[in-house]
Length: 358
Image (cartoon, rainbow, N blue to C red):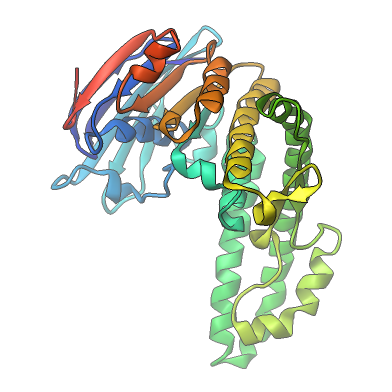
């Protein structure tokens, strides 16, 4: 699969922009704060209906405007798809595929698979559990429509349950309604836990060899899924912790508190790893994401690299560049020196200056 073109209207600092991309490596270079990352964010938003950095729709609309449009043309399995996204400040986004409006975000999934790699991703090991949950969820949501539905359902029930726990403080008669929410929370939660467990198992099959190659075969990397509660015990534990939930006025049990451990030669590098080890493991995670997508959908994803090369040393840069030679890649950077010195083949170069691309 590959993206043929993208067209922006009033998206962030772009008034109007139309780009025709190469099937190979596309490089966007320029000084900082010119709008390079915005191009990658528009691609990710149009392909997944979610912002990579969690921005709300109204935040990506150009300042002083009320709405924004993104149009992306994708070629997949010799078929052409046109995705149109209409963003409005005070209304839900509108999405159409080949001119046909869609009602649910899950209908967009599978049209184009994207792997986004930004400097923040290098801190996924060092940062808290929420970052690691987001890594699992962002990939699973692209690969499994049912997971997206289950996760959205779980998060909705979780928010309603937390709201109820706060209201019970002033009206104890509402306690009886908690059973209804708990039953739904367990149903959705069990499926989320099971899917995450399978995802980590598949990830481990791929990541071990990638990490060995990155570390000169010196380090054995293993990902350990750490569910807050097992799917078999969820219902019982949720009921057992009710009194604590009443006191804290929030739900203390469930997959919203999951994590995964990152073990190198048996040592948990979240706590005891050097920054170099943590960054190498993060790079292994992102590279394994590419191969996992390829294994599941039998096609290569589109890779979005947002100024990552500047954060890696030369050996890790080489490993990353070696991995992307046959994948459509959109790369942002401040200069082309690293690519020239490595004689890396570049298919198309764009210079970005203050919201204009040359």
